[in-house]
Length: 93
Image 1 (tube, rainbow, N blue to C red):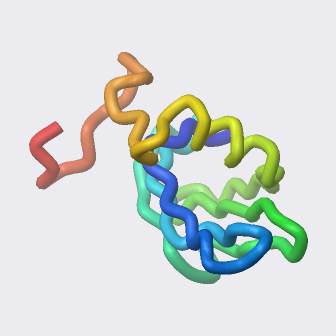
Image 2: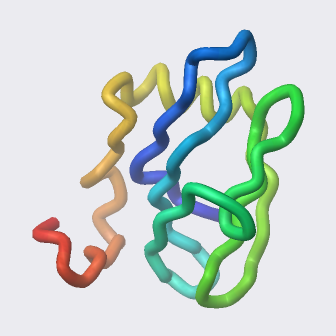
Image 3: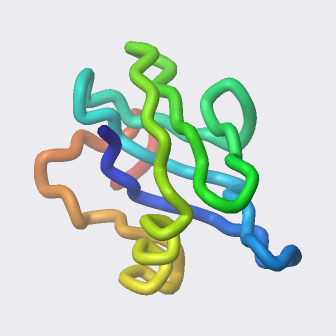
């Protein structure tokens, strides 16, 4: 399971593809960025598979969940929505 902080979509196609995700792995608490395989794999028809680079946990996330995220956070950024999160070293958050 992952906590999403930042999601960027490409809206050029009928079904948006995920271009970038910043997330925290709930298993190892690692925060990572994903923009290509093997960490981010888009699924045909919407959704994506995320893989944590630290512990290799994987999760498929439906396109509906990404749509919900976009509705809740129109700017694509949910930073500060998880008070237990540890900031990424080098990022002033």
